[in-house]
Image 1 (tube, rainbow, N blue to C red):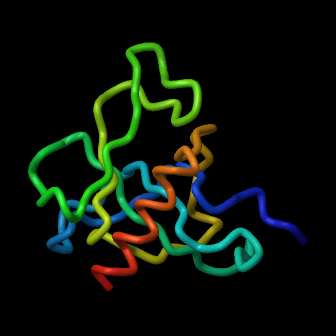
Image 2: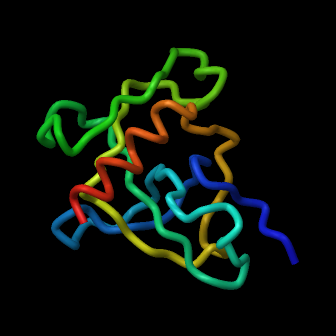
Length: 117
């Protein structure tokens, strides 16, 4: 069975904050390569936050957003991927947002995640 998810896709999942508390539904970008996504398995994600500027610049990638929903990301508020905030969740627990991180920004996210882990 193929997965409905792809690397770079923005999904909503319930995850704790970086300190391990305050679990709530948050947007996150799928890091797992598309070919390795098993709908019955786990996917690796980097969380997205609207609290921009709080994490160090070298840990984040700003994502495009517009008030009406960006054509690619579908985000409506300024956001950034926190590349040090990586979690694994069941693919079954992820909900599609309809958005994707543009390819150039996804490459930056993946490079920063690799440097930080």
